[in-house]
Length: 85
Ligand SMILES: [Zn+2]
Figure 1 (tube, rainbow, N blue to C red):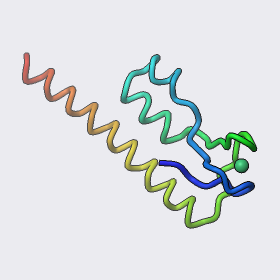
Figure 2 (figure 1 turned 120 degrees about the horizontal axis):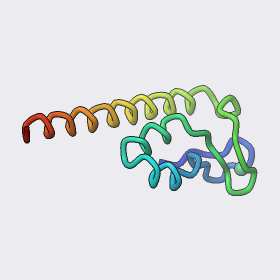
Figure 3 (figure 1 turned 180 degrees about the vertical axis):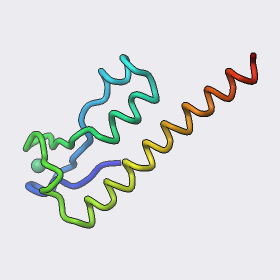
Figure 4 (figure 1 turned 90 degrees about the vertical axis):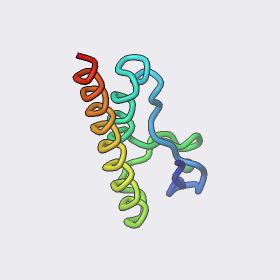
C-alpha cells in the first residue's frame, strides 16, 4: 500500500524490493519490505520521522504483519518439507 509524502503530498512507497526479491525470494522480500525505508518520486528518500504519528503507527503495524507473514510462510515450508519426509 502507498503512503502520502509528508512534503509534497504525493505517493510515497517502500524502497525498491526488486533486488531483494531476486536475491532472497518471497520471505526475504517480505522481511526487506518490512524494514525498508520510504521514498517519494519527487522528494526522494523520506525519513520515517517525517510522517505524522498516526501514519507511523500504521507503518509499524504493517511491518509487523509482513514479518509475521514471512515467519508463517517459512513455518509452512518447514511443515511441508517435514511432511514429505
Ligand atoms: Zn514528496
